Length: 188
Image (tube, rainbow, N blue to C red):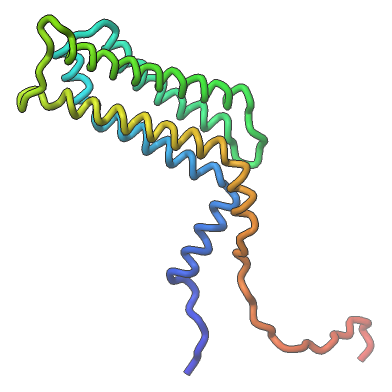
């Protein structure tokens, strides 16, 4: 009966995952960026309904800018962090400019919601029929938090990539015993 450990399993999957992270540590902020974009994109209907109800100045443009620059920031990220190449600094800077535009558009949209709800003449009242306004406000706040987390992960990439490199992922190989020297001189 053999007591050899089977290849594979959870520990091997964990080791392969860590090896992949060591080789491509930029995958961590990339996943965060994808989650941030998907969060906004999956809740765009509440934002669109709020824009149609309130019809504030520039609300549609702010929502459009958030969606457009979210997609473009993903393209900038891919071009800034290429495998086995140094960081493309112009794309990295452009990425953070796009983050700033997205944050400005979200804050502007939130301010338009607050202005519509608190205006003295004919304020928008959030009822069960217009609950999407409250949802849009909540989604935009969470989107801003996710965007900030993504930016921090990108800025701290050099720090945790060094920490990831220190993790031991090599496989221990058992000794096959001592091998006899092989005579290759041709004499028998």
